[in-house]
Length: 170
Image: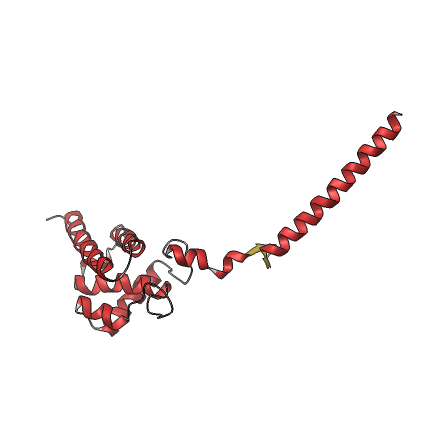
């Protein structure tokens, strides 16, 4: 079996494992994010899941995504405890957490990560209400207010110029 075939086989197994967990505990959004993350891992020069137990890697994929999407917070839906996740895959929570950290570090996964956030997290991102202008973080509402005021001033100036032109023509 070639290395490429081994990667493909393990990738498919991982996806089946995370799909099973997502079907039982999560939603379609998490399922797609798990698949996306596993596919991205499989394209690394050194594919991380070629060594170690696949159960740990599957649990770590869900764990890593869960950490940045508040999966372990009872105030969010879907909710799953870290213990339930590890029990499902038959893994140790400490080992799973360590592998999840490697995955998060490997792909620079943080809260409100554009690529690996659930749709709910993208929509609820408090930073959606801000923009950066010349290095300053400014509320979008302030920018919109300034733009509206500027637009009004420009329209008034144009009206005055039109009146001046009409007066000159007469």
